[in-house]
Length: 463
Image (cartoon, rainbow, N blue to C red; front, side, top):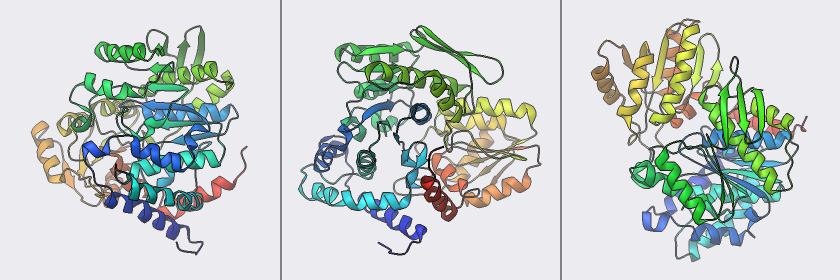
């Protein structure tokens, strides 16, 4: 470990330490997707995940935003709240948050050094192989939440549900935000199969909140709830959302109404996430000794923001950064762009897509809204590859031959080109992949400054 107080050097060291896990970990479905390794690792760490209350959030789209809203409402209610989300866009710290602040690199380094011997021990002794990168990130969160004595943690599922590393939890409340087609190569090729996998986070006698609306998906979830003798709150039946004036919403919860609620996140689709989040918080209040009043609910929802989810990076030109990478997410974000376009000029899109995603389902949303498209390639890490920009050019030409396109392979350069081509009244829309968002966010928040800000913010006492 670099002894210097150079925060960038410490961050690079941590990144390398964790990246080394990917090399030691042999990915194969029969070894990988099981919970024994994770259970063994947590036992060696004295089962930190049993030391705080938990809300477990799964689903295809909306789970990161919903998790963030739940955590922010609980923070506003005066509790110490851990939040684990994934993947990260720019820095590992994003995965590990306490009371809305990213845990600083110095803390992550300290806690990683404390858990590393246990990780090594599992690697050497477990019949199930070495812990994966994701498993270690989750264990690190659980460990630091226990050490920092959080009251409650909100934990987002990584992928699927049943065999996700987070599913060692028996949470106080389980949440399923939505089910759609994504990661079909692992989870199955129908929404019913995916729902089956995701509903694996539901445990006996638990409180369950569902934002899923397709009848076949609801049936799968209801079956699992019945098997586990759990209690279900279903959107449309037990709670709902109505559009109010302006960008506000009315949230209707069983016997309570919250009128004119303001959201910190852009997009009508966030209103459904907010309804699910409020249902989760009210359920948590019923099944635990936590109390969350209406003021905390309102303040939490208005403050909740999430990097890379319809994030406004600047005005004039308006820059919207969004990592939408499946059809449902793209449809939701396109709705925001349609609305913004009414008050703005042209739309210049910057696009890169991870290969294996349903590219043909995503691109038409962009060709409908963009006046020109700059194709780029996100920085390829580990197993992830980007669709070659020239393949996207061909696809766009098939959809709309008159649409101007340009290839700028370097993502930061692509952003500069887009900003130069945009007039102050235009929109620059960066989309298609969370990896692209991570690369391009550095234009506004370069890594060294970002890391220092995270350190400094963490030291400021709560207001």
